[in-house]
Image 1 (cartoon, one colour):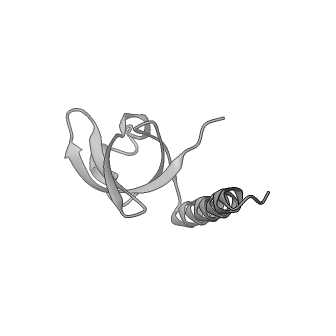
Image 2 (image 1 turned 30 degrees about the vertical axis):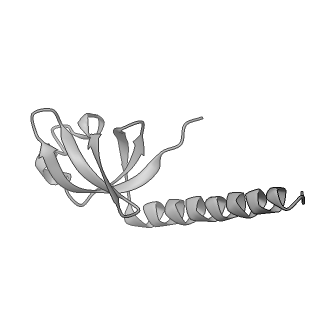
Length: 93
């Protein structure tokens, strides 16, 4: 199983190498968008698209609602993990 993190493409940084800047929860990262461009979705049309990112590659497009739900679930998982870590430090299980 692999985990894709939602991000929104905010600019094309290198058209020739198919690289874009993607906003992932407020952090901007450069990712490769070669997997999501084709004759129906040229590179110029990608700005504003939500994508799932895995190891530096945009793997596929998703809609804004799916992106929001996934980000919400990831935040909830992080909160649970933090709570469990604090409990473990305090000797609880």
